[in-house]
Image (cartoon, rainbow, N blue to C red; front, top):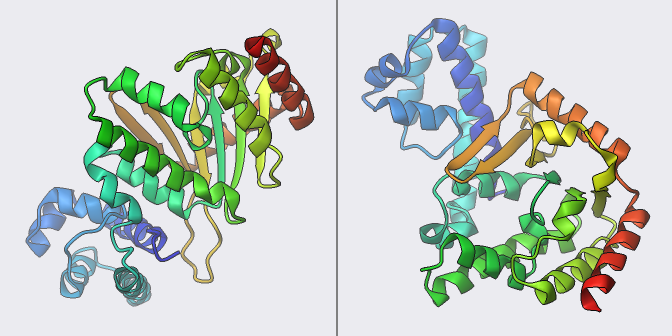
Length: 299
């Protein structure tokens, strides 16, 4: 977990709760420790920030914390520092994906941190194969469609980034549930040949015990997936400490992404997942359908 930001995010949420209870603005908090409001926001969002222990102590004074809250906050802060020190020693302080940061959107860095820490991923897709399941040919076609002027070198780097992310599916520390609209199996961003290879890959990787792929047939009609649209729900492991990493729903559009964490929002998405699974084919039924479609396009 040294590449994860779970301790940092847990501390950030705790600090935000203290600030909001004290009814202090980001500006007031920033002025108290001589930093900008965005720095306070980064700290509360669990992102790396150049803030010292004395500055944290001043914030706790400003928030008028109880002795118990102060002790808990400082204990959590020490854990953040220990985790950061360990990650730095192992060369993971910025995450292995930082080497590719010049070729992906800035908002995606946060997602990659979450994905690296997650142990369970539920992806519901209405249009495309989930990124973590895309073969190079399929992804290359999407890259060219989105960024046609990207250099050949950078295209290969993006494919390399994808391949490194996908390696976790071949271990035992990540479970994937992919819920796909039947339409996903017919879209051909790279042509028929690329789609056939992609469908075969779905069936192969779907045999793994940590991967579940299920398709919702088009004839099913209206179901919760039409309401929530495409999304990825990330769940994280329990920790030995009292720090708990809440689940996150990630949604992405042409102009950016949303990270949803509110309990009621997460509950709605979990309910939607149950509803989608209720109308989806079984894993075996999905494999049969995928095989049938791949044979049709191979003819």
